[in-house]
Image (cartoon, rainbow, N blue to C red):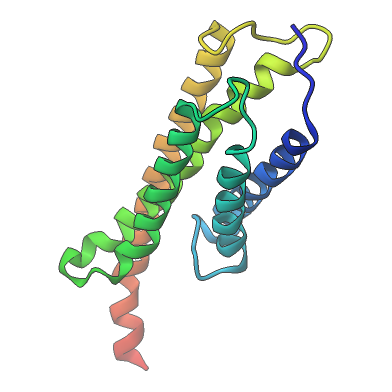
Length: 171
């Protein structure tokens, strides 16, 4: 069950690797996706380009639930960028922003995992359908990594907020 990629499909796949790489780099280097960093900007722009390019790629010939999923991901990302500016949220702001941006990363892995496992290797894909056990198992691993990663981000945000007042009063 081999599905060849159109030129736009190849472009979409390449664009989709941008937020993946930038997100991983951000998690390693900055302990999260931070829109003020270069990797955070690449992540967000790559996410936008990936979702927009997906509108030209459709096996059904029109809009499908995957396109709506992409729009939801963009709305959550916009929320993650906007939340730090909402003063009324108080100390929750960095946690909500970290959750939203990390959640977009997780959500982006859903179609990527499905497409990869149902297409590769080309001669005999690992999964025959989106609900195949290997796809669901992989998504479960991503979910567990998300939970652990978000917990670590919360710990980092909390430890940073505890030391920040001491640093500002000492100087």
